[in-house]
Length: 161
Ligand SMILES: [Mg+2]
Image (tube, rainbow, N blue to C red):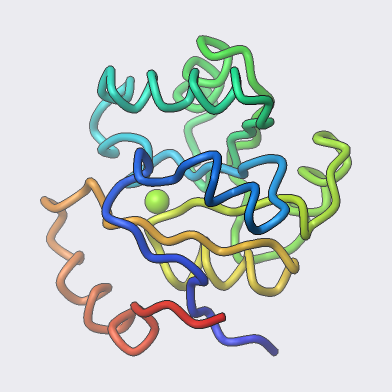
């Protein structure tokens, strides 16, 4: 069983550049929403995040929403606004949602990078699936359990090839 270390640990999704992705052979991103693209209490990302998504798509990268969020309306509304594929209730790190994402994107695991803010869902799922694992600092800072989650994640919050 692979350990849930990210291969890349970046401040923010906008630090993910076409150059970085191309250097790893990545052609598409499986994007977490909550804490990654926007705060869980928001309904749309910041304009600079939307610009980042647009610029990656212009560069030919495929974007796909892989969210554990249980609110279908929230996930669908955002994905539809961007015209991209999506899954809610993906149950990362479990692999079923990943397998469906591979089918729907038509890309192989090694051609996809998972972008997320959590070690035990996003990074662990990515590693198990054989995707590139890109961790970003969470945009969420306000929920009571975050300090506890951070403590549990601490041993894995560093890059490992
Ligand atoms: Mg998240």
